[in-house]
Amino acid sequence: MTRTTPPRPLDVEALFPELAAYRGTTTRLHPRPGSPAVSDSSVGGPMLWPVDEPWPVCDEAHGRGRGRRIADIRQERDLLATAWAGGRFSGLTQEQQQLLDELRRTHRNPEAREGDPLPLIALAQLYRRDVPDLPPGPDGCDLLQVFWCPFSTHGPGRYEPLLHLRWRRSAEVGEVLGTPPLPQLVGSDSYVPETCVLHPEQVRTYPFAGVLPEELCARLDAWEEAREAEAERVGDDAGEPVGYQYDLSIPPGWRVGGFASWHRTDPYPMDCPTCKVPMDLLLTIDGSEWDGGSGSWKPLEERDLAPHPFAMPTKVVVGRHGELNVFVCPADPGHPHLWGLQ
Image 1 (cartoon, rainbow, N blue to C red):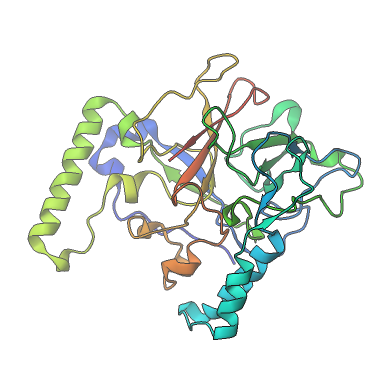
Image 2 (cartoon, helix red, strand yellow; image 1 turned 30 degrees about the horizontal axis):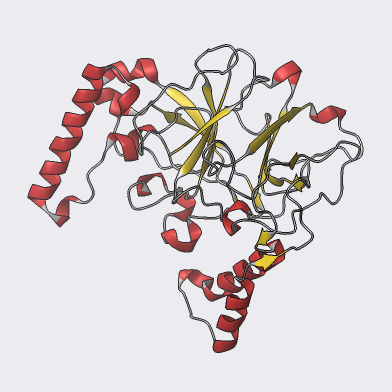
C-alpha cells in the first residue's frame, strides 16, 4: 500500500511569495511493519552485507553487562499488539500481565567485559533508486546503511548515541551474510527497531522559520499569532489553526533530505568538522509519524487511525519522543557525519 500525504491546508507561497526561493523537497519514508528482503530499503530489516566483511561494532565502555534481551522486547511487542488489536486496548489477563512484567526485566551478563566489541544494531538501509532525496554516495555508492549502538552512553557527556554510516555499491556485493551478530543485551527497547518496509514519498518542504531571514520569520510569526487569536475568538467551531511549523513547512516522521527542524533548541551551525562546509540534512529518525500538532500530515490511507499505537510503527524512540537529525558534508560524503537531537 502506498502512503499519500494530504494536500497542505493552504498555499503558503500564495501568502508569502518569497518562500518560493527556499522551497525544497524531502522524502518521507513511511516505515510500516513488514517483511523486507536484503534487496529492499527498510528500517530494521536485513542488510545487504557481504559475508566476508566484519560487522560494525562498538568498543566503548558503557555497562554493556546489564540490559534487556532483544527476544524479550519482541515478545513484549507481540503481546501488546494483540491487546491493541483494532486500535482499542482490550486489557491484559493476570497471566499476560505477569508475563509482561517478566519480559520487562533487566538481565546481567557476567561474562561481558567492557573491552569486548559489541555488535551494532541494523537501523536502516536505503537504496538510492527508492529514495529520491538520498544524496549521491562517495564513489558512486547507491546504498546507505545505518547502524547504531544499543546503549546511549557515548561522547564527552556519556549520554549520546553512537551512529555508524556505511555507503556501498550494491552491485558489488556477492554472497550476503545470512545471520548477523546481535548484542546479548541492549540498554533500551527504543534502540530495537521493528522490521519495517518503506513507502517513500517525495513532498515539498520549507526551512524552519528560525533560519529564514529575520523579516520573513517575523511576518510568519505574526501571521501564526493572528490565526491563533482568531481561533480562540471563534472557539471550537474554528478547528485547529493552521501553522507554518506544524502544517506547512517540515513533515514529521522518518525522512531523507530537506530541512532540519529546530523546535526544541535555537538553530545552531552544523559545519563539517573536516572542511568547515555547512552540512546538509541526510536523515531524520523520528519517534512518531504524527501527533496532535502534526496531524495534518497523516497519510490519507491512515486518516482513521488513532495516534497510539499506529503512529509509532518502528518502535524507535529518540530522546523524549523527539527526533534525531543526521547531517553529512555535501562536498565529501566520506567526511565524518554530525547529528543533532530535537
